[in-house]
Image (tube, rainbow, N blue to C red; front, side):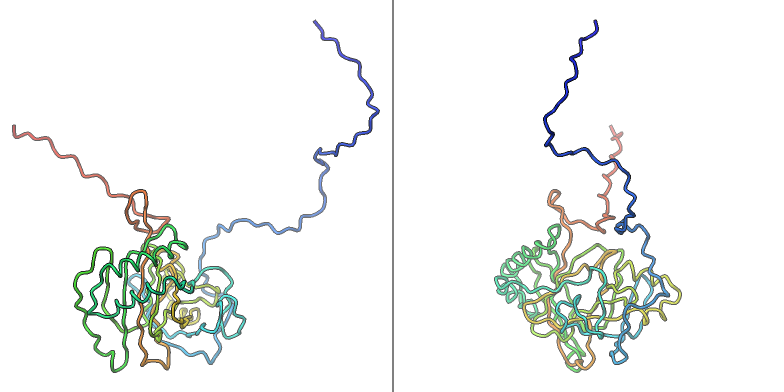
Length: 333
């Protein structure tokens, strides 16, 4: 049966409803908005490119040993003090390098409620001091603050260093300390800075928290590539080390950047893995008689669900060990 259709009626009421029908007319206006596509080109670290910044001729130089795998080179590099730049990434002085990309070490003031914990930790610099619950509590307080920046990490290793150089540092004092509690690991020796930088591109991606104490004559220095305008990571340095001309190219590309830190401040940085910063202890020219007393914490990724430490880099974590093979059947009966 055919349905009866109602006769069409003419609507004479004016339509005040806004027209929401999309406009299908083609837009012929050229789009001038730049396209933000992801960069999938691998970072090949070109050898011959134009520097973004050239250290001034008056910049002092320092001898540095850089080790990547089995290759070690010894070169003289410009050394630049960023202590007066606050923050270093915003400094406009022509004597300081420009920072075109994010990354690099982070310098932070330690909150006043943690200053008591720092005082407790400074006692680790005495080689005769036996750590106990006081150190464990100070570590827990500092770790709670540290995890606000790195929630997937926990502080694992505590490395106190009391460093002397010159006549007083020719023979470092020995360390005979009773075994610490399991919550605190102490790592020595007490060594003189040798300006040795390690490229740890295949190492576990630790995050270091470095706290200087009474004297910072030997600050922590970081390699900077002034062709790329970036701090040097393990991956970047490993690629440069693959070049047969690495010994001649490194002095033309790298500089050592450092800062003297005031009391109750620290530096945070990734120290291992592909993105780990190439770093080392810096003996500043003209301050060879200085001392350095510091405590270094090494943070490591921690699996809360499994209740264990994670090893390897974040994108290439080591798989769990395979289960043991089944025992052969007993045929003695």
